[in-house]
Length: 250
Image (cartoon, rainbow, N blue to C red; front, side, top):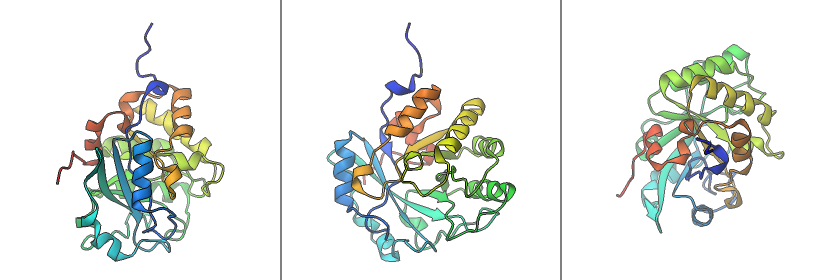
């Protein structure tokens, strides 16, 4: 009997959370990242440099000159994103709406300790839900760090209502990750996403080319939980529209 939506048989087609050496904590060039993205069989790839007040943020010039980044390389579609920082418990971000926003295709909003002191469960959850209210924010980055404890029930219901994607961040599942209790928190998030029908996107959060398109740990967990494929953005290129992206030819 054929099992429908079996995650372990899926191919994840794109990776939208990655950093190059333009971010000060990135160790690889754009060309190196693209080479590994193509080598892993991705069909679309996105760079999302750190912005705003994070100490390792990319310089403004890196965003000013995004226009030189090609839209396609040897069949691999290239998207230009940004990872911005949530800076208050109402969900405000440090995204520059005049200098950065017009130059990018999508926005990831994340919590980083240098930009917002971890608060209570209610405060942290309100911060992420508040960020979902901004139309430019498409993805909530790595909502899986015990330094920022969350009410996952409330978060998932808000994500479903607003249509925002919650990120399954493969980096959070690695032993070397600085975020705390990633595997346990990701498991809870996925179970509630499946229960309520909230959508996710799987990303590498790579800071070096060797991790671009690396989804091994995420794929294993999705398969273990038999997570429904109809809630995973990456399994179909048409689902790039879930983050406001369409095929770009210019």
